[in-house]
Image (cartoon, rainbow, N blue to C red; front, side, top):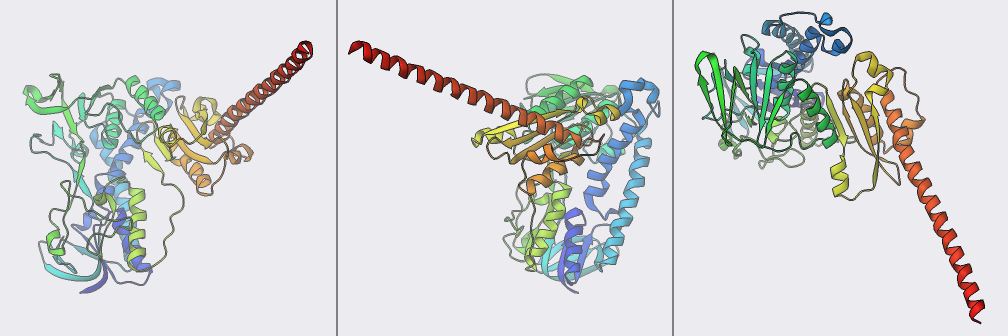
Length: 491
């Protein structure tokens, strides 16, 4: 069976790439291990389940309105893992139906089975019932990643588990040690802390989430500590072992021992590529199972492209979708235009989102900038939704006033960041926010408040500088008068 494009993996990158090629009139095949896992890691163990679980926790605990109603607003006294899984199963099934319908409507042939290369243009698809060979002019690899599971960690799925297995726990534990303070680790750590779990986070780095604005992360850590979370930073884990009565002990290189009911291991992810027989296609993967690709997602074998998490950072579903489209446009010589800066969203509690440069990057590049800040507690909608700790920060060029970056922490941060993204894409200035009317009360009003804050700083500085210059000119004038008087006296 010959195809213009064979896509391996039905996650966000594979889906969008397959559909884009089909809309170009190409004959497309998409291979997924099982029909039940169409949608990939994103739909079944990653993005959608974790974000759905987050929303379920916020709803059932009444977290958003605790300040006003205390525990009276709690929807359920004893929350169970089954309560959380119920919501996840509902959302997952709806999304699965949507994806399968989109593939069907666009004429994409869906094959079930394990994929592996027979040759650079041939893919073997094998399942329990059949084995067949597909031939493709182009190949798109979007097979995603899976949790890193080092041999020295005694995973059992009950007391010591990874980010996939956490969704299958029998019950919510009383205590948890989270090993790895990356995005996945921090997201789950905060969720369980809100459920009342005693959480300790261990990470070998002195600073967490280094790609984020430092002030934003400081605000997040302050919030985490208010929940009772403990952080052990700059600490390396040397071993984990089981203890009697279903406890585990995490041994740190410094000699410390952390005892808890459970341990979540979230140190890195590896490419799900070991079964692809990449050697038959002339490819090789790195030690983390990832593929090298150029800026157009082309591998070292010209007709094979790589997209999604297997190509590395940033490993975001939103970015993977664009990578799928971009790769397909490249292989079939179609135009592709990327508009503006790429936003990042972290679904911690509270949310974090950003677009553009941060203060450290601007300082390093010696770009003169000013900032405007709006605190959610100053915004009427912030009081209504119960967020008193969030903030929006706008960074802009002092001279041209062009937007350089927007950083936000708080409720709806991942939503309102797109206003700043749109203005940045149009090379807009901070004056836009000052002169634009926003609905009231909304969180978008933060942009106006932050704009006034930033512009006030520029104007005050300009006024002070102008007055200083006037004073200097006045002094110089008087000095000239004195010099003239001295010359007259001396003559």
